[in-house]
Each structure stands twice: as C-alpha cells, then as structure tokens.
Length: 119
Image (cartoon, rainbow, N blue to C red):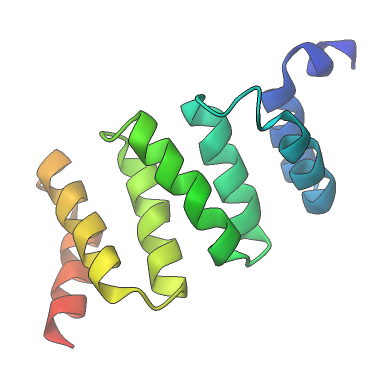
C-alpha cells in the first residue's frame, strides 16, 4: 500500500475503481497545486467529477487537460460529454470538429456532430 502514496495518481484511480468517489476527489484536490500542469492528473480529476454527475466542476479539469495535450481524443470525447451535460451545444460541436480533425474516421464524433448540427 505504501507504493500508492509514491504514485498519487494511482491512488486516485484505485479509489475511483473501488467506488470511493468522494475520497478520490478529496485526495485529488489536496494534490491539485502540485499536479496542475499534469495532463493525466487533470483528466483523472475531470473524470472523477463527471462520474459523480458534477459536469460543471469537471469542465475546468478537462479544459486544462485539453490545454496540456490538445491532441488527446479521449479528453476531447469526455469534454464533449461535459458540454452536452451542461447543454453547451456550440462547445460540443467544436469538440466534435476537433476530434474529426484528429481522427477523420471517428464515426461516433461524426454522428454526434450531424445530430447536433441538425437541431
């Protein structure tokens, strides 16, 4: 168990896997200043908030993760879902377009984009 404290991102992931969402979020927030420029940490924290249906709090983490690595399709996909949960259609469209620039054959992003643009 000592190894988890040497690797705090692993500890957060384990807590999330074990369903200890509040504990994972609390632990992660305590490390935020130290890991504020770590893409993986920001992605994990955004995911934690999204898991507990707090899209509003998840968005800044996904935005920061995207700023740190703007070619990560997984981050863009979750960021799209957050925008949809917050009813931010234009931002979701932008995310889908960015995904398609990175992966032109991404059918999920294309279908969602078609659906959003037709409404």
